[in-house]
Length: 205
Ligand code: ADP
Ligand code: 5GP
Image (tube, rainbow, N blue to C red):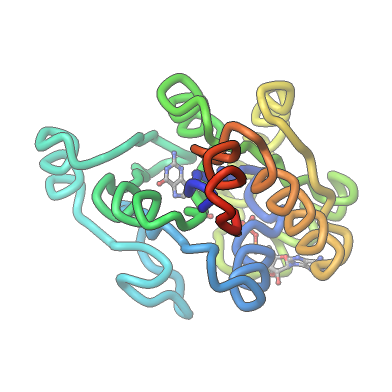
């Protein structure tokens, strides 16, 4: 069996990470979303435990102290982090775990987990990015400016990623990610015993 792996998806706020991941997971049962913890306030449509685990700053700091997070970062004006337990359990089962995290978190993962796959999601243009953030209608004017300014800083790190995907159309972005997953699953290093399975006349998938 192919080993599970981490699929890290980053990209500026408004590039469509949430939209694209949701569509990706609808069509691919083996992709499991790692729900992050955050100190950000929930948006009207967000559900605690689904989109995020919403925490107070004290609760978040306690999780850091207890070493419960795989990575964490201060993004825009809040803390965000990835709980360890779910990730380890799913990888162990051979699943693909999707981390929708910012560039600081991705760099922490890159240092620790060499077998993770890193995808940077881009908007078709920066003007379209701004329109999408405004169009989403979930941030104040000040927050929109912070997120848009941070988008340019995040682009400095695109070279650290393995792949870029342009979210012009959601279906196309999903299909690009599916192709990346398909190729990654065929990496020789993700199989433990190709030769043994063949010799023992076993099917390898
Ligand atoms: P992120 O999670 O990266 O912050 P979202 O998924 O919330 O981004 O998307 C930002 C906004 O852009 C949302 O209103 C979403 O509906 C819209 N959007 C996402 N992808 C597309 C697309 N391919 N074409 C048009 N609008 C999109
Ligand atoms: P938003 O507030 O728009 O949901 O997310 C803001 C930013 O935080 C996005 O870039 C998102 O990818 C990032 N983010 C969400 N969860 C995590 C996490 O667990 N760790 C890190 N480092 N970033 C995260």
